[in-house]
Image (cartoon, rainbow, N blue to C red; front, side, top):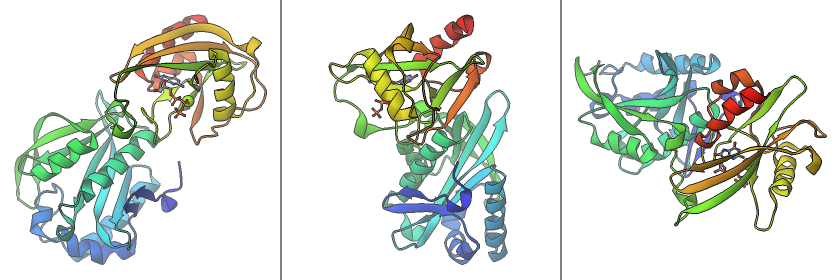
Amino acid sequence: MPDIATLFLDAAPYRLRPLLPEDATALHNLVNDWEVVRMLSRLPFPYPRDLADDWIAATLAMHRAKQGYHFAILDNQNRFMGCVGLRVETLPQIGRVGMLGYWVGRPYWKQGIATKAATRLAHWALANLDITRLRATVAQDNAASATVLERTGFKAIGTDRQMFIARGTDHPVTVYEMTRTDINMPQTLPATRKLVLVSAAALVDTEGRVLLARRPEGKSLAGLWEFPGGKMEPGESAEAALIRELHEELGIDVSRGCLAPFTFASHSYTTFDLLMPLFLCRRWSGTPTGREGQALAWVHVKDLRDYPMPEADLPFIALLQETL
Ligand SMILES: Nc1nc2c([nH]c(=O)n2[C@@H]2O[C@H](COP(=O)(O)OP(=O)(O)OP(=O)(O)O)[C@@H](O)[C@H]2O)c(=O)[nH]1
Ligand SMILES: [Mg+2]
């Protein structure tokens, strides 16, 4: 995970960067607006100038403690337009959840800025943080914000009531959630359904641990843990594809004789059918490293369920636990 102080997220044509003390004046000018504050549950109105400094200091402390990630939304001239952020909370039964929130100053409304910023933060958080899902709540008289969440990939899961400090009363809200399977990647969706052939390996070390790789941001199912491998090219055998992928993704060399067929996955995703042989491999040369920026983990088979995986991989877990 990159150091928070240098964490800039590109949300072209906008940019997200951690809040800085010098943002306080611009932040205060935009947020001290009844039309903005009345939609934010935790903010008072009027919004005192000192609170802007306190809030920015609090976000920096949350960043350092890995409890929250709050960003300024900037335009291409570094003009401050609003904020987007999340707090990590642990909920009973559900586990660690990123609670997402955002606001945009009134001069910047109706330009799709909140959607771009929320989408970028949501994709980054699901790909990089140890959370099971994102959650957000929207006042039921805030249709614009509901549209932002729906465009980002959130789904409404229920209703609740929440205290809105500026309104001095509680108010009905819609609760939304987004998981890793809700990440919209419209530009990569095929027009027609197709069969995708993928070859993957369970690399097993001398202690019987298996190597998992975390799908990086920008790929489908980003943030889920998978077995290294990739798509077979036309005319390529499963073994040849896997040897190539293990070299490209992990920088290791494997010979054909070290790939033992283990099992396969056959799974229907919404837009394609996946057929994926899984090989066991105990010998390779080189040290596996995430050459595409992906995180790696050597995992004892008894702990495999602690790592969220693509649906297609779930049947592998019990088989590996019986075998290794
Ligand atoms: N490598 C791998 N892919 C998996 C697993 N489980 C699973 O559903 N898949 C799916 O299989 C497809 C293979 O994707 P990939 O992104 O690894 O393919 P690739 O390495 O060739 O990458 P690229 O197409 O981005 O260049 C993806 O749709 C992925 O979601 C798994 O355990 N390992
Ligand atoms: Mg791959």
